[in-house]
Amino acid sequence: MAAANYLPSEDQFLCSICLDVFTDPVTTSCGHNFCKTCITEHWDTNDQYLCPLCKEGFTSRPDLKINTLLSEMAAQFRQSAQQKASSSSSEQQVSKPGEVPCDVCTGTKLKARKSCLVCLVSYCETHLEPHLTMSGLKDIS
Image (cartoon, rainbow, N blue to C red; front, side):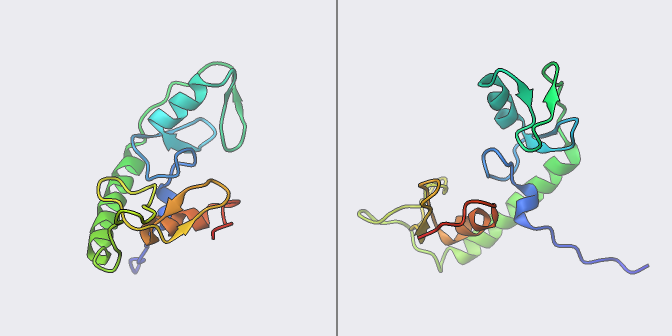
């Protein structure tokens, strides 16, 4: 049997709450994955324990365990994305005073290329693509 060349896409490693690559991903009993901190904070601020994606209700707060496979894959993806971003950062410009910086960049802020009229966030080229793939968030100017 020939080995398949599988390249996972970034949206498979994004938490649907923070829209960033998973940090300590956990899986709910309905099968959805979230950053442990994101789902914990979500449930801390709501009266009911519902899955943010499918709205399945839980009678008590579920005991969450780290999804180790997804955690390892997200870490590899994050490392690959950082290497890709650093190699393409020569093409992207660091934000200068008076220019709009990317709201998502951590550390050195790159110059924003577009701003979303829905979530009111500005994005550099690197962070723009995952935002465009999220349904309902495509009104970019």
